[in-house]
Length: 323
Figure: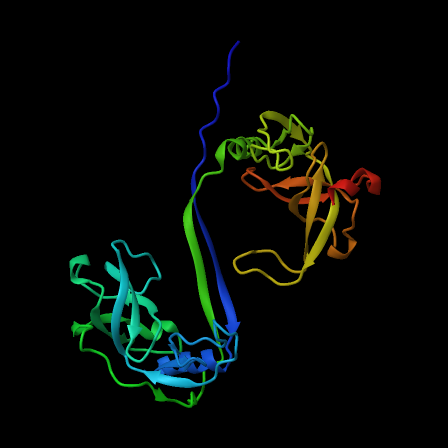
């Protein structure tokens, strides 16, 4: 008997990135607008503690907080970690320390970067001050970084924080914060086989030896029974639309005109519906039970979308368990 060696496990860089947009309440608006004006604001709790960055509700009592105070741009490092290889988008391009800094007048610490020549120059208890960005727009990046300042914490500090109205001209009312995660993704044994089959324009799942369901894409184990799956089963390529949604918002960097339909498609022989875009038909004519087939991408590596086959619609009883 000749055994076929398993395919080489795939690996590829993967980047997940999106802009996070949020509106600001009065406390966060005052804090970020204050940074634009080189002013650091905190909020005082019912117990008299000063929180920097400020929050809108007391973390201990859940009471609404509105008493703003101004704290100093100097402070003390409470803990730190050295970053030898800064990534794109981080505060500094050269190696730096991530630090928690308790600003003078505050009772909590603020996370930011410390510009230091090396880890030997950083220590808990060292005194630092804010280095303001040359151009400020009302964001945490208005603090370019912290820099060493004066001696150790002993004997440092200032008096009580001063009350502040939180009022500024042209207050910042909303922000857009980019979120990014980049890493190396390895799909594992089961999905590696699935991707290799797609390159041959075949769709392959794996059957659970206990419940006999065929999962596509395969996961290497049955999510219901918890047992390993190794029995490979070719399914489709045709299938049935089980349910769907109409997308009306155009995604950035996605060359698809809206509105379009994204659907759950139960491929023939599969025990689980997968996701796919429906094309070749007006969006308002897509329906549950519609029979579809894949249209492969230009390089033939994956189904770009699914289109109607022209067959009669599937009976509801044939796919109701896959909704």
